[in-house]
Image (cartoon, rainbow, N blue to C red):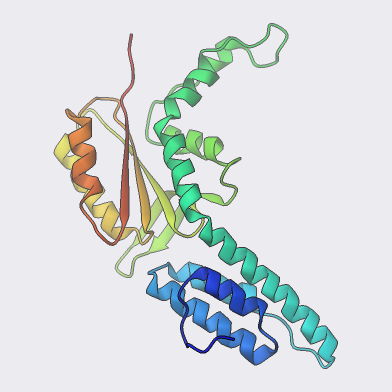
Length: 244
């Protein structure tokens, strides 16, 4: 059915996996998918996971081997479909991060029922005081919608190890920035430029909680850094505390 030795899309890969009739054909198609991932500049972990999911035991019994192969085919197809949902996940994450204050307001400003175990005075103690508070809240905020989210993940860049605040799947990184009293807009920008190069994910979100309001023109700042790289998609999300 397929004559070319490369994939045109993940949809093509799924169809090839479904139609794999023996061990050799299945492995050949897995290799094609792995090559396609590399051409798409997906992370090392991404195609290493494909290798793990595609592994199955070859038994003396042909029927048992076929059963194991069919299970492996299902695992690979499910994984590819998860990767194909990336655009929907990106839109969801961006919407959630942009509306972070709606979450805080819904959590803190509503008065619990008088018989509830959670009291208003307890909620009043939840305040953002430093850079460690933001990832803690974001993890809880995103976990129900992005079950694969991980916190404080070390990544080897080849020259050094960097720690991502939050990772979602294999290709989405969220780095939190918290403005300090001694930080300038320029120094914040330098941190962002360094991080966008170090992180290997193709979708990088910089969630900036600008408590000290060091960013003077948020729209200009956002446009400058989001357009800085072509090989990665940079998202700048800025929140400045609102005092009425």
